[in-house]
Length: 112
Image (cartoon, rainbow, N blue to C red; front, top):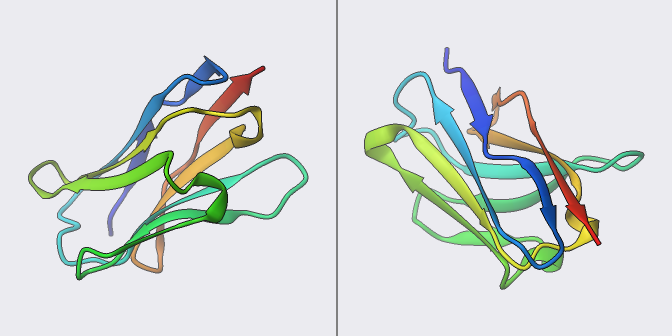
């Protein structure tokens, strides 16, 4: 079993940046894909960024050019760099490793 712990959320003004981290309790090198999701109040959870085993990435149209997913295998950690944040980015952000492992979520609030 792999446990995931997210950190890095918080309150930021529009136009600001945050970097989310998702630390795993064990090796996640071989577990793919690695992804970030988010869920805003009253909305369904949606995929924000996905990194596949071949290194390719996919981003939701709403975050393309602003968010970057990356990973550090040595630290068993994945990241989501979020730049030029907008109020509509406000949500609880979750990391997901493979198809079964979810983090507990971290709140991101962007004020206008």
